Image 1 (tube, rainbow, N blue to C red):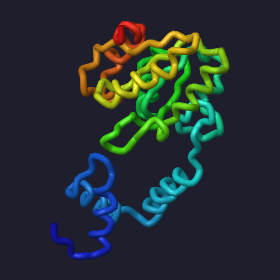
Image 2 (image 1 turned 90 degrees about the vertical axis):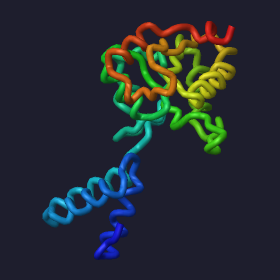
Image 3 (image 1 turned 180 degrees about the horizontal axis):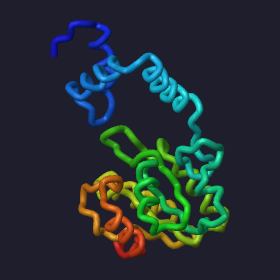
Length: 204
């Protein structure tokens, strides 16, 4: 792709680093911004700067939040004895959209993936163990994607959690192997949460 301006080329390169954005889409986005007024572009860049500088991660579940503790963890209406373990914030949003879950969450921040150099120490696993150690947790739902990395992470978590007096379950596999939670339709995901099964069945 030939550019008439180095400034344009550099901007397209940066937009092209975003997930799912190719060079052509990046070029369209940059050209769109160039057509906007200075005030509109200013609001756009300020919102990104403000997001990066002021965003917080919940001290309890590690979900993205505006406060030290997210609204879900702070709510007295949620069942704090039921923790749904997910990969990232997108999965929290997907499950919340089903309106089928009234517990709380724990965001790992990724999945175990030796190929990508991601090990257990890189995830928020110890934070989950600390929550279980309080004795206030009755059930852990391992709601991770049906991928090799997801299954590896579930098995590791099961080995770490089975010594505690807590029920460990996984979402029902109405989700095809290789599927990520954020792309599953709300009805299927809601049913998968509601019809979860004890994980022991999968390792016996």
